[in-house]
Length: 280
Ligand SMILES: [Zn+2]
Image (cartoon, rainbow, N blue to C red; front, side, top):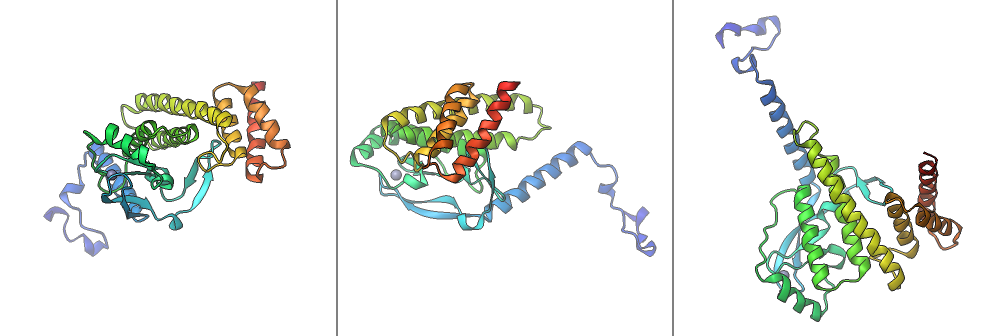
């Protein structure tokens, strides 16, 4: 723009026409989109496409996985949901075969019995269609992957602890979604309410499943020891108002010699929270 050219003689930058009257709403949206893009690019740096061979249909496929050595754990929620500095790793824990629909947590992906393979082919594979999302997974992508894994767990008659653990991780994903929602979105309040409802539903299922597993299974429970399982039941019971169940479990965790120290600390913290809840 000629009107404001030659400003460099004052040591100033020239003013461009499109900088003068800016649509503030548009600018906000552009900045937001820019920020999201930047975060996605950062997240992508911590991901790698790993090749899997499907134990059900034999197909080779790639699935996005976290380069686990490069992310830093910065804490955890009361129900042991881990939090990482760079990204939410929980989004990437489910592996889905895009051809036959078999899906499970990476930890158990290879473990399928012949009878389970048959059940998957008969009940999942027919009509299954899914495309691995390009780039980073949104929380909705991740929640869908947990849904597919859960459908597989049902069809293959997984034990209660495994089904409960999937529900717990799905709840963690929903919580992650809730934490990252845009507060300026006109639908923000509505979406938060939906998420809260879904999170509670998933956590309630997790609690019921863990209680059932405790009475039926020998352990380990989805890779967890007995004290971790008892602690989780205590946390979830407290959340749903069963303070007596929670208090009993905490007392036994704290007095037991076999409780691991990390869980003992968390149990102490939970006990304080429950005491405060009872007072108020
Ligand atoms: Zn497959």
